Image 1 (cartoon, rainbow, N blue to C red):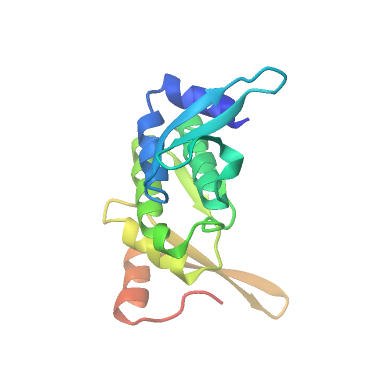
Image 2: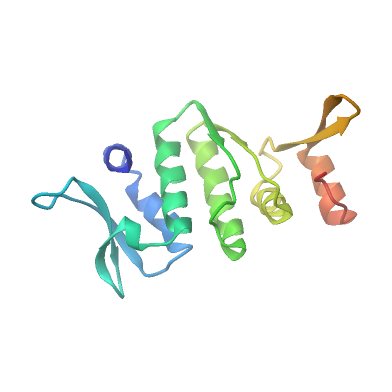
Length: 171
């Protein structure tokens, strides 16, 4: 699956931007390669400064997850991307740069992103990655008796609640 996604990214001349995203997590990443070995199926490999050319499976979950998000983003240009627990496997120190990259390319590719999270660090990173031109909205689900109610916080309100008041937005 990822081989075909990378092939599509190469055809769209998007591969350098994907590598840039991955370098935010691991600066040693040089390139992505599609490799076909005799007796094996075609696989994705990463060219790395320290370890050379190694299979994608040799790298951490964060690299694999961001690669999949980036390649899928290119495929759904002009559409919608749904990501459950967007921060999963991404180190908290990499959330800011990763989310800034995702927001930028969602805007350029005209992709509407719907992401879930339970992580306050992820909420803050997404808020920091967005700007006044970003249509960022947070929905918090609250259960009251036998009903669930969706509470909507637009970017401006979310900014005030988090940055100025330092309040919790999750329940």
